[in-house]
View (cartoon, rainbow, N blue to C red):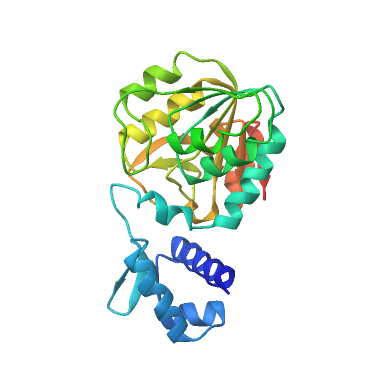
Length: 254
């Protein structure tokens, strides 16, 4: 039962990310459940800070900061695990890896913990904890001021930290992807940190779940096809797929 509820609420978030606003009746029709069930879902999602209800309609909360870390862990959980499994298959034992922040990257770290003899540089305490039992792992953690909401370090400390490394793979997420393929973030510090992570890897791997596709956020850090690999459950437009192909960016669909 809990899995059904989680999956349905993931679907609500995904629908709102694409349609902007929907009524409980419209969501009920889309998901083939009662309006009362949808209203209960929307109430809980509102209390978790994920959606906003107004005048009979629901929409995703648009804000200058992402929602809290724990609520984000519950969004698209199964898709994030599929993304993490695909990333695990891209990275061999003994690799040098940079890991960014966010719940999708943390999922990748948990799957990578079965690899041997990794070297990992990260600005995420969550990612480091996920690697605790990895055999033979060596970890370098960024210093500086901890952002307590996400247990990570961004800003100047992250820029200086990642500039010291040259790794085989850089794995990072983003705040959102526009319909035109722009890679977006909530603020300049997050954007700069992700640029630094991407820049220190011989192969850059962007991980993004489908709820982020089509989000409109204020800061841009390039385009999807600027990176080597995108691992996602999202369905991109034909123009974005074509641009990725022309620029040698591999899309791994999960």
